[in-house]
Length: 136
Image 1 (tube, rainbow, N blue to C red):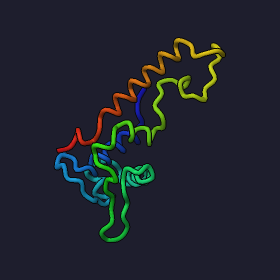
Image 2 (cartoon, helix red, strand yellow):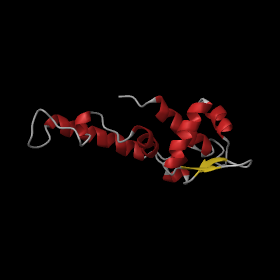
Image 3 (cartoon, rainbow, N blue to C red):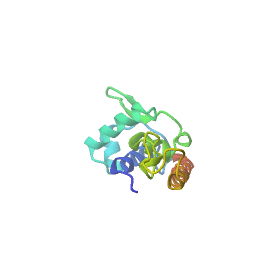
């Protein structure tokens, strides 16, 4: 299992906007975000739209426009960002909820229980990493 490049880029963008090593949140234009994060500008703009739509980033227009965090870094987890981009994390399609197992019709099989447990552990781990941990 591997996260997409888009999720990696989204994490980088949140990190940059949250103040990176300075610990100071600041408003930044898309080009600066792109340059500092190493994410191509077109991809940065696409991801920034998603982050704004998800309520993690605010967008401002005009000469003093740009992007800034809409929440404190301590309120944004890796899980929040990854699931905004990827959707719910499941290591197997059988735990996605809308999947109909062909093995059994009664209750979840032992494989599904295992995959569900591992998926939950991954979600909990990612939820424990908030962006304040990476700055300052």
